Length: 106
Image (cartoon, rainbow, N blue to C red; front, side, top):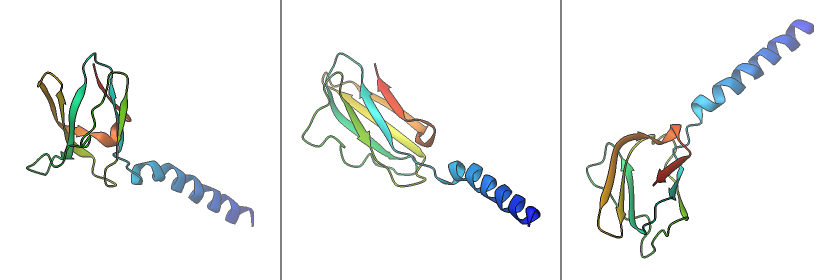
């Protein structure tokens, strides 16, 4: 009986350790820590050839505000494009968003 309990405990431990590797959440928060308004935010899979829709839509992101970006599970490699009020575009390619919780614009 003790052997069975130890085996079950070991299996539970292995499952708990493997869970973070299997549950890859690519969602993250864009924080506007700059002194400019952000007019547009685009996030698309690095495999896509287009940016897709502006995630802010008709809204803007004021300094000090944040936007939560929700992505499909396991879509870890993403391209990010931020357009500031002055028209400057900031782009980063192949960001592993499964490894971050925040993306700061400063």
